[in-house]
Image (cartoon, rainbow, N blue to C red; front, side, top):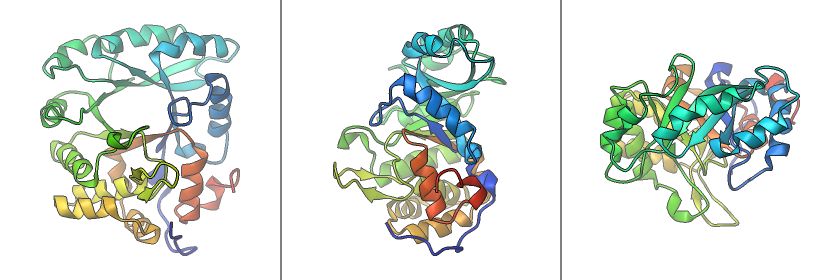
Length: 289
């Protein structure tokens, strides 16, 4: 990965506020929850804390989390809870209320097979003033219909951008079309899985083609400015780090109202790469570098 020249780019700190959701317990990292909780608390107490989003935990592991946090003070952990169905989303808040140390901030929901079921199934979900609900957009013929339905709902989109197998990674054109659908429908989104580096790359171990989270941020900004599909594809495919950093450096923080965050199994990696690209001030990275 090509490095940006030192001092070349400066961005307002709010561009990366709560940008990195802590998905340490998910593949490929799969950190034990007993280790992930104290590690997360170290991150939210560190200089780079402004970049750190919630700890992401499956609903099925909330009882394990309750035992691990029994001695913690109220509201110690901000959580994003993943659930396998809209029906499970209605049950998740009660599960989190059994954890005095936790605050439910986000729900991430898998979509049912039949999209029209979505709104009815989520009707019992929590107050949207307090909890943001993301609905995972399937990578099939339901995508456009679902995003259109989200445009008239209080729910946001979640795009899967990778995984443990090569076929779980959408190519640049598929992802570009998802971004354009969301932007044109005015549906904010988050991304999850596979965004292991700031810039588009080929993983040297798996040979998977991986999207860069900064490429996706720059592509979102371009889509908001009216770029067409070919331009978005080109930005997602860009592998020169200095070029991508320059595109990101020109963005308004308003872009984050659309691209809200991404899940990462390593918070240290994104922060270190952003610092290496000179996109963060030294005060945000003194605990890492």
